[in-house]
Amino acid sequence: MCTNYLTLRGTETEIDTFIDDNRGTYTITFEKAIPLQSEISRTREWRIANWGTASDIDIKNTRMLFPNYSWDPQTSQNTICQLKFETERTPPEHWLHAIAKKYPNIQFTLYYDKPV
Image (cartoon, rainbow, N blue to C red; front, top):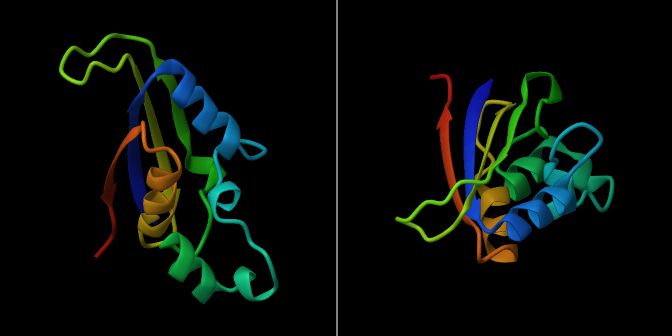
C-alpha cells in the first residue's frame, strides 16, 4: 500500500466545495473528479493511466481531518484540510493534477510513502 498525505489550503468555501464535490459514501473518491465511464475505464490499466493508481481510496485506512479554520498569514488563506489515505502501490498523481486544474484557488500538497 501507498500512504498518502494530502493538504489543501484555501478559503472555507473553496475547501467545503471540494469536499462536497468529491465525497463518496464514506470519504472522498477519485471517481467523482475522473469518472469511470465504461467497462474499459474499470480496468486496472485505465485507472493507473487516469488516476495514477490502480484503486480508489481505501476507505478502511482513511483519516480525514476536517478543515482547521485558522488564519495562516504566510498564505493569506484561512483553511487547511488534511487527509491521510491509502492507495494501491502508487500515489494518485494524475488525479491530483486533474483536481488542481478544477480547483485553481486551492493549493494542493501531496506527500506519500510508497513501498519499495
